[in-house]
Image (cartoon, rainbow, N blue to C red; front, side, top):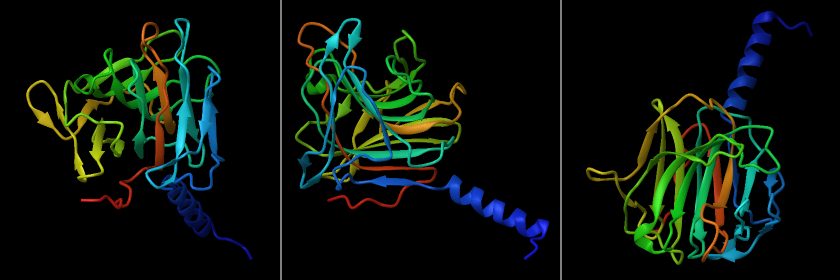
Length: 255
């Protein structure tokens, strides 16, 4: 059958649209992470414990050393590289460690390095120097790779109520209207945790696009930002990962 140029154009358009809006959902119930690329320069451990009643995904790394701090990530290769993104994950558990940053990455650049932190943006929950709840922060950072430390783009000063490892939360990270946005939901209430921005409380953090990384991969990351006395490593437990270009479907959250 001879295809007209118009029909070929329509097929190409449908293919482009379907790929642009392809999305990923992984509940890790099969106990494997096929379709994920493991970033593991400090010989960490990837496992699938049962947490909050279902199989989840645990990323675990020791604190490492001053010149080789603990860091571990898993990069989602199940969808096309995208510019506009909306990525979410349940955060079910972590430890009361000093200097622990855990969360989501987006627009991560390839090739993924074997030693230095990957380039891209991240939404991170930070356990700061004393490990106490009132020192936890939600922040958006940019990693430029090499020997450079991640750059703070925005961070909350106080979280109300402060997230606790015994609770279940959902991290949300997305791009929209010329900016990058982050939020953390308490799944026990279905409400966003309040974040102090210097003048008042808001239900999300925001930073304008800086234009450095325009597209890339999504995934999960955890690393140690304080190495030394009392540093213990990182060990977050994630579940129900979603990544797409548009807002995801409503989650079944207990109210």
